Image (tube, rainbow, N blue to C red):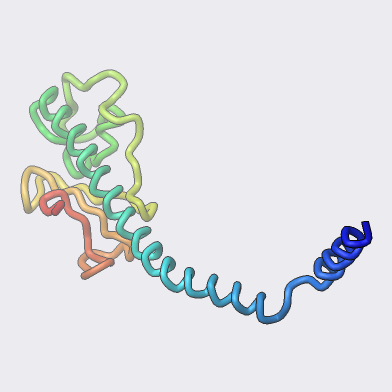
Amino acid sequence: MRFTHRFKKNIQKQSEKGFTLIEIMVVVTILAILIALVAPKMVGRSDQARRVATKTQIKNIEGALQLYKLDNGVYPSTEQNLDALVNLPTVGIIPKHWKEGGYLAKIPDDAWDNPYVYVSPGTHGPYDLVSYGPDNEPGGEGDDADIENWDLN
């Protein structure tokens, strides 16, 4: 019984002491090393994910544009813009076989919340569909490079 009583007192004394400064420093150092290893990998992924999402949206819009052309014989004009995929155009060539309900529920913005640039006829095909990327300026290199429907690689 005395042994049990002493053992309990020793445990109580140790638990009252808390963590030593050395123990806290070791934990902080381990956390800092983990953050230093993981953070750079996570930061680069966010921009890459936005580029992939924007490319996917461009492909979806292209699919809707193809359906519009199949029904109406032409792509929406620059003046009609991508809105022609959601609402019956009231300017330019009015489509005679526009699909009730439209070809898209709404026109999405790119992954940086900027509108897509649509030109028809385009300089690279029947239409050009472009996201100016994170800087929302034409051109750019690296992370600021434009995402264009004719060059989705």
